[in-house]
Amino acid sequence: MRRLLPALFVLLAFAVPSLAQAPGFGFADKGPIRLDVATIEVVEEYRPPLKDPNVEHLIPVTPTAAVKLWAQDRLKAVGSQGTARLVIRDASVVEQPLERTEGVRGWFTKDQTERYSGKISVELVVQQPAKGFNGAATAAASRSTTVREDVSLAEREKVMLELVRQLATDLDGQLDATIRANLFPVLVL
Image (cartoon, helix red, strand yellow):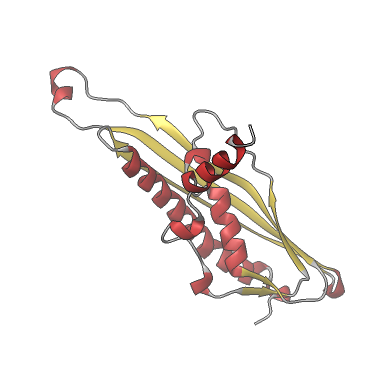
């Protein structure tokens, strides 16, 4: 048993790629959103069911991980008091089987066989008692994509990673705009 545990950790380290190994993930190039708060925390309200039709837990970079990375790269606490809480309300990816062409015609047709629909929904809640300010900014992104019946496992994984990347990029644009509009009193320019 003692030998099995270290081997398991090594196996898991190689089986799950880090965000750094997933090209295109990261928001540091966008510049920080500086908030006049002392702390920023991410709250995972969404709990993946870990069963069909949900497949987000099978993606190397989950939507939840992408939101956490966004918070790490974009949100910066520069104040001495107050809190900002980024609440993840939804971070799901659902697989839906699609109809296939049947009969002789189906032998010669490459159908789209699965649709992956992803959603991310978050709310940034800021409480700054020194300024008497309480506010929130919300954003949501949704996208879907399909895969052909002959797609390899590696290609399928790449498609799902791209779906999460696009969701995160959409969310970044929306959050940037709503934070600047709704949380202006606690923005440090």
